[in-house]
Image (cartoon, rainbow over all chains, first blue to last red):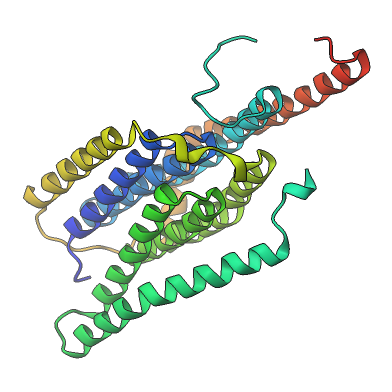
Length: 103
Length: 215
């Protein structure tokens, strides 16, 4: 492998920044979910890079990346259920308009 | 509801436009990388890495910047498949397969379904102007901080080692058996909760229709 570890870290940092921008700038709940997926992918890249480069004996990072993927799948399923419910009750998927705790 | 779903002709147009834009953007980059490879400035692994990085970053930028929500979701596919390629570069082929199966198959389908069930076309995405500079500042700050930290640190010898597949499974199911069970419960609870949530809304809507919407 000729690619240094820092290349992967830089890629992951840029991806995380783009995802963070998306979470803050978007207003549709599903687009925020997409940006969160991008951030999770960046974190998983970091985990796997550190596991294969720096920790080849224990490689806990690989296991954690698997858990990240599983929890992200659960999060997407649950969040989309909530967004669908919100849309049925309020006719909107915009997080700015979902500002009451009870209706 | 079905009238809101994009027609096949519309999907054809999206795919054609996406392919055209993608090849126009990626073609010169590919040619440049191959030229650098021919001049033996960079190795073959670096060609694949830079190509995957460009796909990932452009896809992510498209996913957070494009005004059309369906285009954003389709652009996310490029990012997630590029991330799978990066996993392959990191010699962990099992996670690349899981990434393609779970994200390329499941998550993207869920997201696109969610977009289409919540009439995404009419969503006023254009109206968010005030928070974009702040969001850009924070995102650039975080990315710059992480990049600076990654560039300045000394990482020692950089040798990626192949982690054998049986060793991975042994570690996963011997040392991490309790977290595996917890994650299994979490997935079960999450999807049951999503199902119950959506169904309760339907029954409430049926009650609404029965009682004349006096709720």
